[in-house]
Image 1 (cartoon, rainbow, N blue to C red):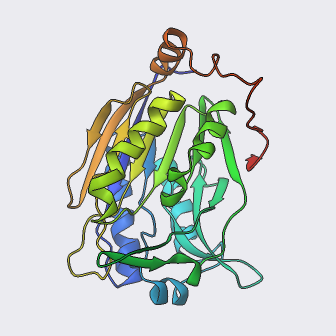
Image 2 (tube, helix red, strand yellow; image 1 turned 135 degrees about the horizontal axis):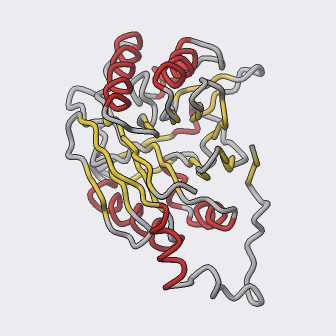
Length: 282
């Protein structure tokens, strides 16, 4: 395994214009790759606003304008591209909140469909029902590519620690989380949750949010970040549009797991987590 790898998170502003969002994503991915990033990540639902009606109306099949662009960008820039997430329609007409991952040739390496749907009601603060648009996914791909072993989960998925633990047990060293926490849950739980998933599983977590758009109906928290296996934040964005970068030293994973062997000290005689459950090897 190579010792280091540069990752870039594109915290982009999403507007109510799909072609404009796709062009803007292209510009940000190109800029990130020109700065030397080997892995580039886009936010959750980056091609349209995070609004149930708009997402449903703009859902597209694989091979549509968004995934075609992502494939071309990955190939042209010779990068691993985690395409945030998009409203994806399958052949049966179901819609999923889906993240596609492409390799340096523009080939799909994995597809994660959000498994836990964001249906919440916080009185006088925020109410949202993602299940009014999306169906829930049922598997989490483990993506193995050259010296990289990574997994993708989407936003609300990160609140369920079983998924991150399954990923760690499957050998993942980098957990990527396209996410759009809001201005209620974000200040309370964003940093805490991302750092906990990194710390508990002794892996890198890269969480990429949209920028906050005060004109939108849904206000994303922003603050995209990268946390290391010790729970330290390596870099964090503000609320506006920006690209943040971090250098991932894979030796840190080995060092932390060797010096504080949490995974080895698990009491599997008194509890069990089936590493084959909810996984889909690529």
